[in-house]
Amino acid sequence: LIFSSSEIIELNGTIIEKMIQDTALFKDKMNIYAEKCAIKYHHKKIKGSKWKKYLSPIYNFCLNYFVNLGFLDGYAGLINAYEIAVYTRKKYVHLYKLESGT
Picture 1 (cartoon, rainbow, N blue to C red):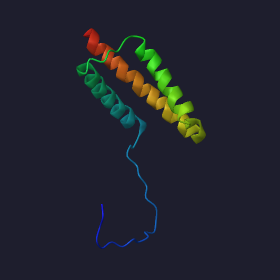
Picture 2: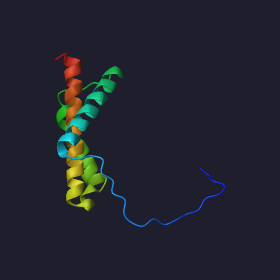
Picture 3: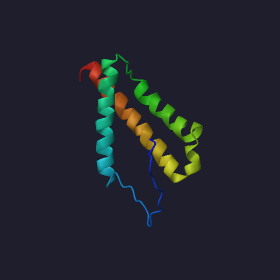
Picture 4: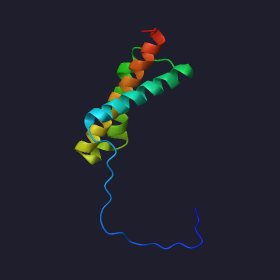
């Protein structure tokens, strides 16, 4: 965006971004996202084998923690990589249930 007349001002104070109030709300939200993603995969005919629900979370953890250098963020990087792996597992569990009809 280009503004014809704009002025940059400095604000005093800090900005605190707090999207999730507690871990239960976060887990519920991730479960909803995993289910929606599984439905999308199901419509696109992406297969979710038994192996994917075990190997994909490990792959995603290693990708986010080691390849994407999450370990440099310390404990926060570890938790982030772990939560992404948990989300991936839930996604493939939902997809497997959709495919098997259970």
